[in-house]
Length: 75
Image (cartoon, rainbow, N blue to C red; front, side):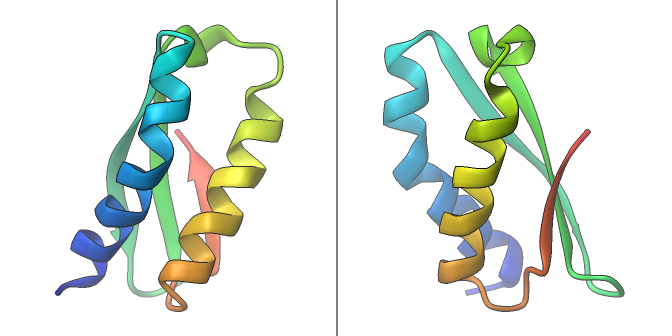
């Protein structure tokens, strides 16, 4: 499995919780040079006032599943 596929797989475990509140997360890309995975919040998550907390939870889950990821950035 590629790094991108492993990131997508980790995001799939998070999506059901986001979709309960009509939100979602989209994987944008991964930079091998700095280890940053880029995501985009969609739906209700896009304008949610606690999206920074959601980002931190996503980052913990993704980094645990994909050690090559050093950071998750919202774009």
